Image (tube, rainbow, N blue to C red; front, side, top):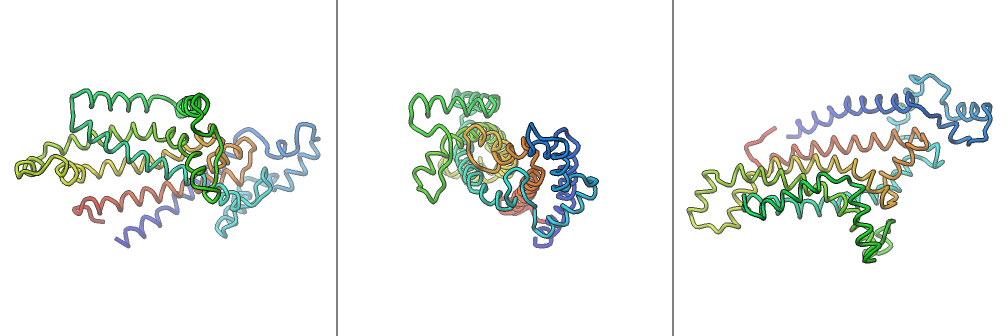
Length: 313
């Protein structure tokens, strides 16, 4: 097992190298000059050229990449062009809102989607099954920002139960912290509940009439223990897979949701940095997201061995 984990971690090196090359190249090959944005609309060409020289942007792209990569390998992601702070400080400051939103969404999603999927499979062909599948299609078809603005209008503006936008840090009070997370978490969870509920239903249907399940029922076990011990556990591998993929997709949803709710997290930081052509910040955030994605895939693969003892690495 340890050798497998070691090989997978070593395999992340070429993946991250490709991500670094692609992100670095795309940022510099697309239109837009960060020096012109920093200088402002009334700046002269001489002032823009001086800023480019100060930022090192007048050098060849290959030379810029070597310098940047060397600094990254030493743990230095550089200074933000736009925020005038070290990128590592910016990321550390923005991690908490994104992490809190992701964890709340994940808990809400799993706690809702898995029971709904099992219920739909158990009541296959009934109005319950059709209702769950109809809601999942609806949740998966509506864009994130539409769900977000609809929830804001209903619960924050019309009913005034929850804050419209913003974020309160955990150290400032648990009540306010949770109040500001409810609507963003519901917005993100609407999509992933739909996806995971459908996969859970399909996985449970493949197992629910298997021989070992019929044997368990024949022994007189109640339906709930049969579902939990003999059905859900054997159907868990594809469910865990799609939950892992859902967490990876969550990164993209976080960018939109943080913008809709004005949450100062990594998603909002990415949007601001892209608009400002803030190369060091965009590169560092995308590298971080890529690393999280790779590690999540490794964690999902390791979880298989816990759920199914027949799987060995």
